[in-house]
Length: 413
Image (cartoon, rainbow, N blue to C red; front, top):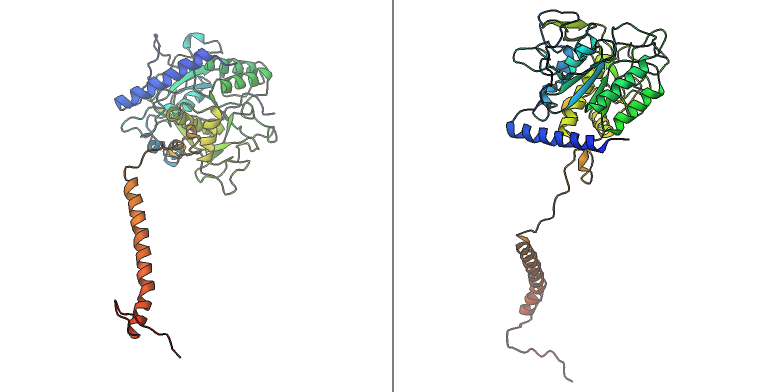
């Protein structure tokens, strides 16, 4: 994972626009039978920069086989959702990302590239995990292939840095993402706590933006230190697991860890060309990307959920550990299908994905049921009378009783 440093008032009009956009997107998607993706306003050709990769991918990565996001696609593909990737930039030229990447911003002196130049290769891989297109014959796709990526470049390299201005720059990037209408913000990075950073996170949450961050990777210097922004309340902090579902040793543990996802032996799109890059050591950066993709699926399926409700849905539908929650994997490994399909909450709170309270309707067969009950009751009473009368009649016959005949049993003296 990329570590930036050693670990150590909402706008009602903009919210209204976002709500209208979500409704229109969902309605048109339903009419057309396909996910709706708004076109990018890009005018100039996307830049080509960053490392290349292997031209072919022999098989589907284990992480995709483990999470099976395609099982959720009949219900949600992330259409109409924008995920801001605050990272090292995102290539817009890879075949699996072409048309998925919007014009964004660059806070590292490459403003003309609109965040679409990724010299490190980190942000492109993260974006690919989130929203790479699913194409016939390709063994790779994103978790939410209909989502859009808003690239925001704050990291020039994947090398650690002690730049004290970085937390404030990340805060500015979060503010930019909120202003541009992001629905989910992915932060596959770690930095020091800063008042501006905390304020930016709080503003994003107040604007109903889901914030997902890497829990951090352990080094000799940071084993006992929490990671930021993952440690801020309301942020979904993501740890890493391996192919057997076990906690990755380098993934930071802590009470703030909320959920886990694949974080070892990771493969994804390369910035230059059409190939793939491998990250054998993985990291919680990539685990966070898988959870951001699942959050995009949930947000598209349930656009009215708050960030806390999205987090709650992801956690309650995760493949939980035996103890329910622990400091290594939080509530367990994210499960995209269950996150979208499960009916949660109660009938009085359908916003959480439960069935609504059924409307009361008149029963057209009510009178027949009433008549049947009365008939049964009368029949039972008659049957009881007949059973009670039978012994009396038998005894009377034995004593010579006949209809119309009077028997005088009085004794005279």
